[in-house]
Image 1 (spheres, rainbow, N blue to C red):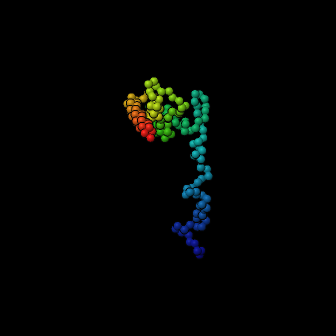
Image 2 (cartoon, rainbow, N blue to C red):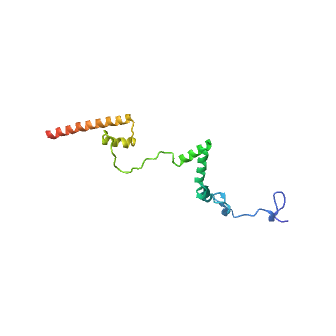
Image 3 (tube, rainbow, N blue to C red):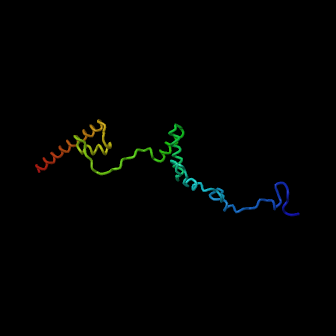
Length: 161
């Protein structure tokens, strides 16, 4: 009799599972099939869409956002919520600061240019709130009075030697 017995849970050798090269079939603990689709490439491939009766290429995300925006404008709450969420993620809902065009500004009539500079740096371009303007003017006048006081003290010290 052979050393291998055939019976319950002991199939003949020709019908047993064959050992495979397991390391080649697994990467990072997951099985990889050779014919798996490249999902990243599929999501990045331009789509052909019709706009104004013409066929144009468009990124899939752009097409999805346009569709989502249209649905939101039609009143679909879920579409509006998702559209706003996507805009927030992309940073489109944060206010844009105006780019500086040049370094010259002309103060409003009756406004000290130094006060106008502080107002623009602090609160942006006019119109300004009257309370904010009054607070800056009061602070400016206090500073000017203190500067004049210090200047007089300096001149007295300079004369007395």
